[in-house]
Length: 118
Length: 115
Image (cartoon, rainbow over all chains, first blue to last red; front, side, top):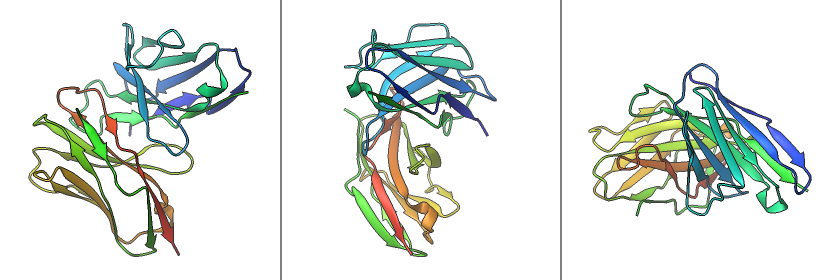
């Protein structure tokens, strides 16, 4: 099956620093990757849609200058949380869509990255 | 607007019993896909089952079945013969045709299986 990895799986940083999270599709090419944020005991909220070779599309209310997304290749997308603050502490999950996938089960999720900002 | 509702924040079920997790959705799009995901405490999202809006039969995958009632806009998940490992958060999700790439998630139901 399609595998998506994320690195790191958890990170602790000081307030004001930047953190980069990587999302990789290991055995398939993904023209589209998605970034979600999940606060404790809440659902997944889509932050942005990332297309290879073009600018990401951000959801309403998500600061594009704070959450920088780069999708430089068909297997890698990165999310950089710039000048992180404690309120950015959350679980960040990426997913990747199979390029030539069928109508279902074509979006595969990474294991998530838990970010804690002190 | 598209929306997913899961009215059960938490559910308990005895081991080996069946349980139904409710999901209703709202969309004006005639074509859409419905999904159920399981999220254990480790955080990974595990795909369970899919139902297309034009599928004639209810989807089944092992112990999981989807009770799809299109007219009522409901897509309840039935888990048969519950196991302790089924304890997790369960999310109902929808991908409307008009926003083909976006999957909208419901608020989730926390299922606890009691030995």
